[in-house]
Image 1: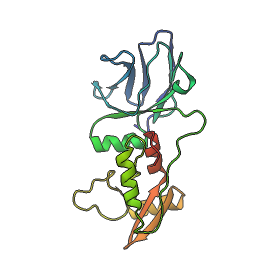
Image 2: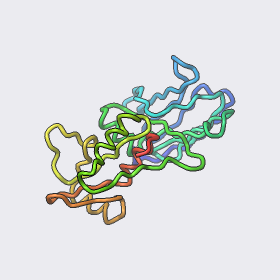
Image 3: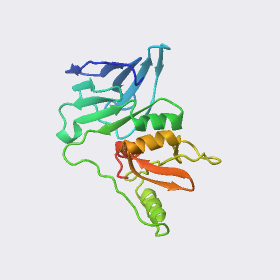
Image 4: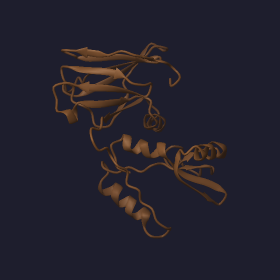
Length: 218
């Protein structure tokens, strides 16, 4: 889908019960939920299979107003502007093929979309916890994620080593070929990396952005 051109369209209706837009071989429809007319639902029509899908919807969802503009800004996300609401509640993105959505689609083995609020002013900042081995970094991270699950997430690191039993790609690590990770490191796509027992480990910028896409701080 990432190779397909975006079919650009803007929906700007005074009484907008649903908005439809095409990206690649899929049509996305934002409509009011059958259970709650103030909340949003998303349906996807696959033009290749001629089937309708009800994706898993992640993230905080906007309250749909009677008037909105929908603008596909890329093949990864759609800009939704709600009218008649406070400025900090008006700008949203529906992520349809971002790195975070791709990761969640792989984990959940189903179609996934994710809402994220547009940032006005100062954006969400990541929290970086660093230090030598044995000082309790893991304990602190585990406590933050246990006590504040809606505020903190954990970025998934990359490694060139082989998966161990029960390890899942994209959950425990992103298992990557050495030539790929070394190329990405040389291109400045990693925040940090290290060589351990002949394998490369590192944290990519994309992995951290996947966490901030969820509205979390780490």
